[in-house]
Length: 138
Ligand SMILES: [Zn+2]
Image (cartoon, rainbow, N blue to C red; front, side, top):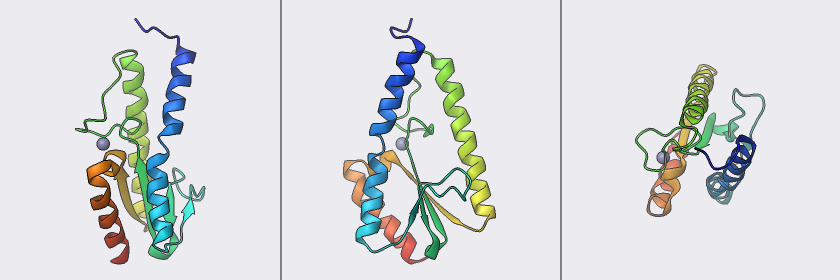
């Protein structure tokens, strides 16, 4: 049995989501600091991608491991309560991601996906270096 009702649960999860914008800010400030110009959540593109770099024809998506269902990731586990609800919800998000990413490819954009777990402590520098290298060779 779940200890909180559905409304409370979704409010709790909404709070978690709001706090999870941090990974995106890490990437944004690095790009800014390195002099890259970008647009945020551009509605012209499928799925309003997080970061759009027109000059590099590249789109960066920073995906939360929970919300986007990062497979084989230690930060991703279906909650024990309302398991079926979360399974459906997260699967739907992952499917939507896949479709959006395909469309972006078809529009001729490069796509870089960064998972939240790749920005954690010991992995952060490696991921950011890799990102900058990728962009510079684009
Ligand atoms: Zn992950």
